[in-house]
Length: 127
Image (cartoon, rainbow, N blue to C red; front, side, top):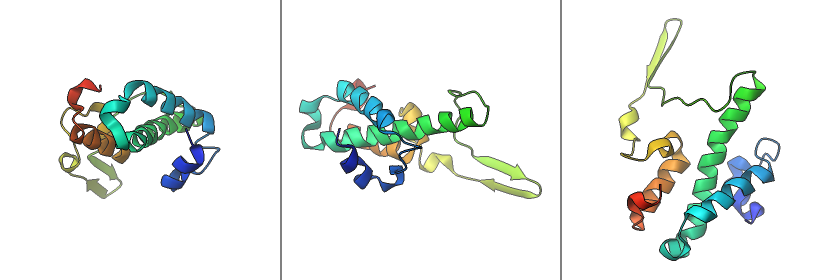
């Protein structure tokens, strides 16, 4: 994986303390094993980068929870309503929910990956 190219494509991941090279390489190696290069063809790198971005975003939540003394690895759905004091906010999660995308719905990168995967004809064979 060319980490510099990845970080240039996704400048939100340039913080090497929060997103160390080893984390990126770990998820990239998993993505390389899962994505069929022949089917992804010229979109392979984009697919791998979105896969990495999704997974390091998810992992950074675990790291943050661990740093705060919470248990990492716990899952939660999309927050659709939150109240603090007299203020309440809700979101229409259905507008960004992709059917059968599972945890890929948890990040924008995951949803982009899922849509690209379906466009190139991967369907459910990827997961």
